[in-house]
Amino acid sequence: MAVAPQVGTAVDTSKMPWVPMQPKDGSPPRSFAKILHLDEKRNFVIMLNRTVKGTVLPSHTHLCEAIGYTLRGRWAYRDIDLGPESFGVEPTGTEHAPEYTEDTEALIIFLGDSPDLLKTHLPDGRTITTTMDTFIELRRKQEEMIAAAG
Image (tube, one colour):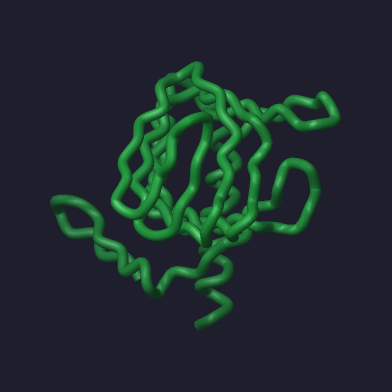
């Protein structure tokens, strides 16, 4: 699965399962993750994200810096259109509601000053904070799926 040589870590992502990410509004999952790296001390997450065409995420505010590189597909927010090989940086404090016009895969990196990474604004007026714990739980589920596959 993962190799940890003296100088770092290597992961064969093709052998990793896509873990469903439960939407904050309780609807069925339309986005999936492969957690590649977590550093809880530095509030640092690297993940692959796969999102189904037609998905519109609720508006959310970045409590961390988010860096994204689109591998395939297309997504957009505000006046920004991100197709294959697009790179973007969202600084702390920015707000957006991404829309996925194609099935999309992207490499996403979150780097925060605290464990609180995103604040999602639901249509019913509730606000939910996504923390490092969310990604730790996704990694736990991913490890369970790997173990079950044997």
